[in-house]
Image 1 (tube, rainbow, N blue to C red):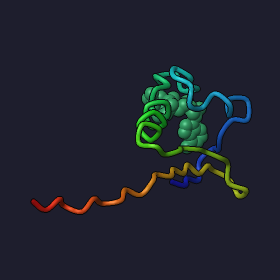
Image 2: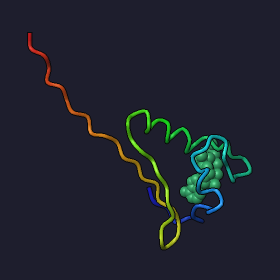
Image 3: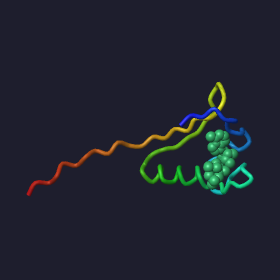
Image 4: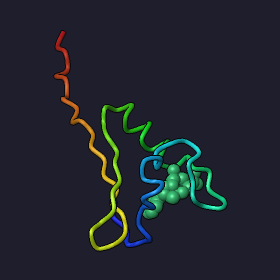
Length: 73
Ligand SMILES: Nc1ncnc2c1ncn2[C@@H]1O[C@H](COP(=O)(O)OP(=O)(O)OP(=O)(O)O)[C@@H](O)[C@H]1O
Ligand SMILES: [Mg+2]
């Protein structure tokens, strides 16, 4: 997902996915931590980086499931 917001704060970049890390006055700091945990639990990866022209992009990768053939009796 790509946005055109303020971009990631370089100070906080390393802690983005830490639980309870937030820069918002009313933030819980759980959003990205939960997202990364769910994606990791499925064997995937989630990362975020700043765009060269402003804003940030978050990308995730998930492994493709290979469908098992239905066992014939
Ligand atoms: N798209 C974004 N652009 C810039 N900074 C972001 C972006 N997404 C997250 N961040 C930074 O990462 C921090 C952590 O985000 P996270 O979603 O984990 O928590 P939060 O949004 O602060 O609170 P909440 O628990 O309500 O989601 C944010 O406080 C903000 O500083
Ligand atoms: Mg959030």
